[in-house]
Amino acid sequence: MRFGGASRHRRRRETPDLTPAPTGCRYVLFFLVCASCGASVAELTFKHGVSFFGEFKYPPEFEHFDYVNPDAPKGGMMVLATDDPWNSFTPYLNKGIVAPGVQHDFGSNPFFYDGLFTASDDEIGTFYGNLAGGVAISDDFTQVRVRLRPEARWHDGVPVTARDVRFTFEHIAENSAFNLQSAFGMVDSVEIHGDFDLTFHLNDVNGLNAAVVSSLGKIAILPEHYWREADNTKTTQTPPLGSGPYRIAEFKQSRSLLYERVPDYWGKDLGVHRGRHNLDHIRYDFYRDATVAREAFRKGLIDVWRETDPRFWFDRYDDALAKGRMVKRKHNFQYYVGLLRGLVINSRREHLKDLRVREALTLAFDYGWHNRVITRGFHTRPDSYFAPSVFAAVGRPGPAEVRLLAPFRAELPARVFTESFELKPSNGIGRNRGLLIEAMRLLRDAGWMVRDGALTNESGERFSLTFVLRSVEERRLVTQFVDQLQKLGVDTRVRLVDAAHYINIMKDFDFDISFGQLGVANPAGIEIISYWHSSNAMLPRTRNLSGIQSEAVDEMILRVLNARSREELTAAQRALDRILLWNFLTIPLIAVEGPKVVYWNKFGRPPVDAEFRTSFPSAWWYDDAKAAKIRVPD
Image 1: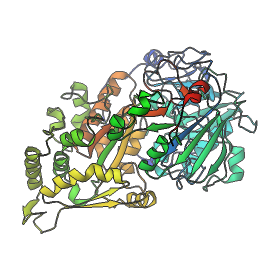
Image 2: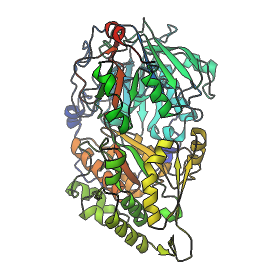
Image 3: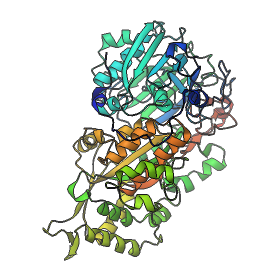
């Protein structure tokens, strides 16, 4: 049996090993997954999770996470908003939009399916067994032995078995989008030893380490006995069989989806779940427009609102806050880092292939004015694809980074080796003259000149840019940028499209600039393959929106995913960061950071947030006494 789609056919780039190879004993100390040097999987000591940095805060059979209330009451409902126009309950399919809450992704949100592991919100790079009662990993990470918990059950009472795990990864290899197939291309096969015992056999095409192993736990394990009959190759609007703490109670397609808590959930007494999943019901209501959704929140139709508009955050909730009806707070979030929002430049376009052109466009965006007038300092601007983590490139490259980058000097801009990357600031007053002059110089060097007010090349072709946007809010965010570009003689066009049309446009790469999101796990995981690896540049529905194709990037991705120490990982990830930054593929706008939320004051929460991610809504509960005091305005 072979899994992994096309990615397994990629030939690993042969480059010298530039760092000392760690010994087997070093693996024991670093990853806490090996019992002895050189041991086979069968001889390894099974651990209760996977830790990249070599430590587990919580011991085996721990009672509960520190950031939950183990005695939290059960009951009540929370209503959340979603803008996903979902039309299917079939997970990991290359068509359709799956309903919110169905696919498990290590998030704090309630989930319908269980995964092998569960993330800890007060640790980075540490994952504890969920379906997996124990995990053992070979020294070279090519074999991952998993023992399932025999008490794990589907909602129909049937045990979760190794056959379900194998079926799930077969489904991904055969039916999922190529991005997902590529990301999990390291899975060659799943060998079954018994009902609750299996081994993942992994290849090292893109590198293997504990972070790659933990990614196996991100996948929602599917019930083979259900999906064999239901046909997992097709979208469906029939609620499927799950295993998690919630099940689907009722729904109206692309309008609302109601989850109900499973009282006899098999995992409710595990340490990873005790004190969580306290709400009896969670409902997702669909709103196509954020303005309408915000108004629904203000009328009490939605309980919690993630505010992204500084005008409302700073001024519009004061009365309700003063009266104690609402609460406003910022949640912790460092589980992912990087860009929550940026303007992605499509380097597939002939006139955007020259990095001097892309740098000029970056300079033309007047972020100082944008931050002062549009966002009022509401957001943090990222200066790295991995900010604010320790893996972000800082200053000039150190010796370890230079050694990794040196074989690619001919491909890389010289500044990668000699300069510290920084986004040049504007004065913020709306007259970005100095940076526009610099942008014009770069455009001239790239063969573009202003003639009769129009930016053209020697052939007389006009330089034009088409923005593909999905909302009125996005259009508002680029209005001043469009004005700046017109000062450079650029012919700009703005296309505002609906979700379905947007998907088709992006599938055909029919855009010059569009908003994108590039959140990366901390530390980086296999998602970096789908974001930046050359093999994904020309695939329909790719996450490599910029279309970058670079041997240097491909090699740094391999180095990141093959790092076996903190030092190796830091050097490789910073080197990758430098290459991406100096290629000016994205105009960064908003860093991944804790969301700013406003909610009706009828919920209880633990007194302390987890350090790296607020456990919302899984650690919250409904407070009857608070709810009784709430008077929702007419």
